[in-house]
Length: 294
Ligand code: SF4
Image (tube, rainbow, N blue to C red; front, side, top):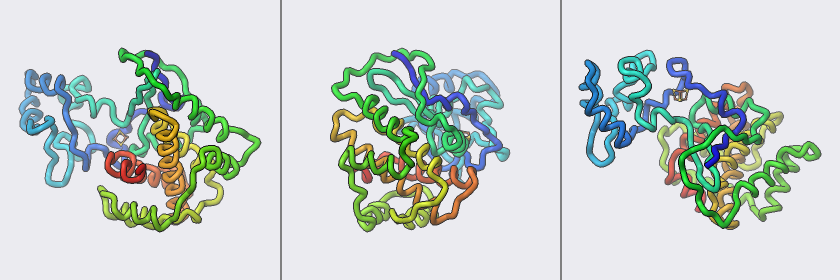
């Protein structure tokens, strides 16, 4: 079926050793079956360094070092698997990160905001709501009763309508889908109950206040919301599910606004860092996403 992506998608390239936040630290990386077999069959002086670093318990995965780093990440932030045996020997997760895929009647790919380079690209691209065909994938289309892509297009049309300023557009979206922002105290209770990778991030997110919105940051907020809608709404199985997902995206948008305001973020780098923190702590944790959706 056809594969679509946001127009900015092709701008992304991993900046590896120039990245201030390696995705090879803090996350246990599962190895897909084909790559695992490829590692076992590899004839190279680096082969035993790879196989010795894998735990085959449950899903095969690289065992992190004591300081939570991927064992193949060197001091310069480069991947020893790539430098020794080449990119063809990366497992699926490492090759694809930070890309994500959604499958409905078509396939959609995007870049995840937890990567700061992806966040900078998304937040600095004015074509945030332009989705273009980029190829085909060998996956059968899902038969779907609900068209989340069409619904998302309607929201994009509201956000892109130059007759409305951003707060008017947001207001129209809340009303069209009968979404209420909810009490801050209730959201804070949920934020307090989540699992965090970094306790400093929890402290940051616990400053949430829906009344705290930054001035002059509407474009960044709109692009952040467009990204979330792209990623989370299309796989909705019916209208209620779509509203729940939309409500989740709107909460994340308020959380982002609140963080920009409380942290006084102004430069693209500062703003992208905060977007990455929300993405990493919330979107990239199934449990946390679920807790907020519920
Ligand atoms: S976080 Fe992004 S830019 Fe940084 S190393 Fe990972 S994929 Fe590359």
